Image 1 (spheres, helix red, strand yellow):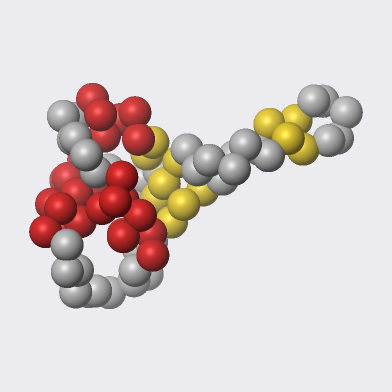
Image 2: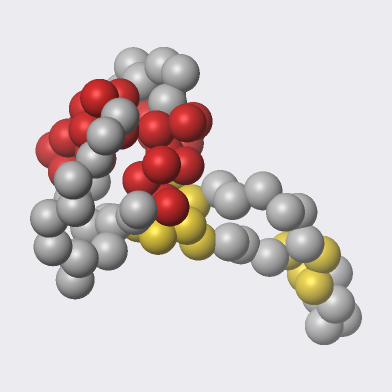
Length: 79
């Protein structure tokens, strides 16, 4: 899973960093990676089923009924 950082601009060429990642996308070039956390495996299944390699945000995971997934999402980004 990739973490995509978005940057807001004032329109004058100055970037304002928020430091919070808001959009994610699965890396389709990565093969099988064994995951230790059951919640990470479950979250990856949800991502595969609903988004595959398309970008998504945490709000969409909330709408799918995912709860308490931030640690699992971080684990997916770190692997």
